[in-house]
Length: 299
Image (cartoon, rainbow, N blue to C red; front, side, top):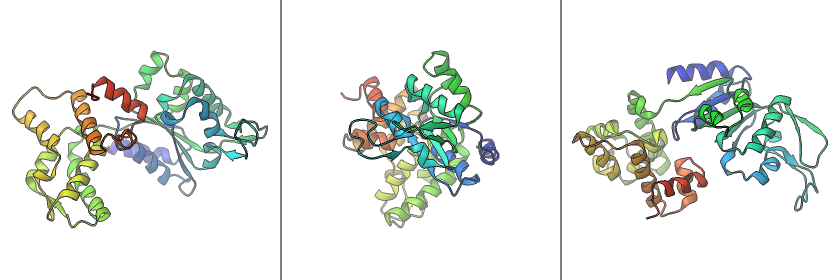
């Protein structure tokens, strides 16, 4: 993490494109925000575009904007996200989910640093800095021809890879205390600390959902805790079950099994609300439905 933060701080002082990779929940959004805040563009707009949720038919209009009469229903001109970003930062989240034809359009804009609104003739300069985020192996996607090689090299000028939380357990104590303070303030609770037994349990857990999962676990514990300290019984049952399996030297859960259990837990917590569940998990609804089918969670 020190290496990643050091690289992020150095690159923030430039206008270079940045590719941030890492597992879901590992903090890619936070890192992109960090780079923007440390840059000379910090006072300018910070515009995030979720590539996974933009249908192909709407992508061009959403990114580049349109003029009045450009298509049926375009009753007035509307600037796109690129135009709204101005001299700020554009974050292309889940870049791997862009369709091939959309990748070609994005490549042209990055190369020429200009675009036009749909139905318009005026050329608009692209002054924004680009940061792309992905939890997909883009190198593999390029080899499989699912992602354009030329676009990959345009985005991959500087790559910052965020380690999974299970690979940096030494950060857990500070992160836990940070989330305790944050959610105690948010929910008006008097929780101040985590008891030693509960802390040992949290430190032994593997966190397939990374920092986002840790935040959800701590928020839940802060809400249900009855005193000033979070106890073992305030943690989700899935945490102690997974840790107990490890302690008893049983066959450890695979990442897929832990992911399936976590998704099932979030589906239960949201009472089956797929949109809310996908938001908490930090994935698209399409990705969530794929995982539900893969792990047979609909049963």
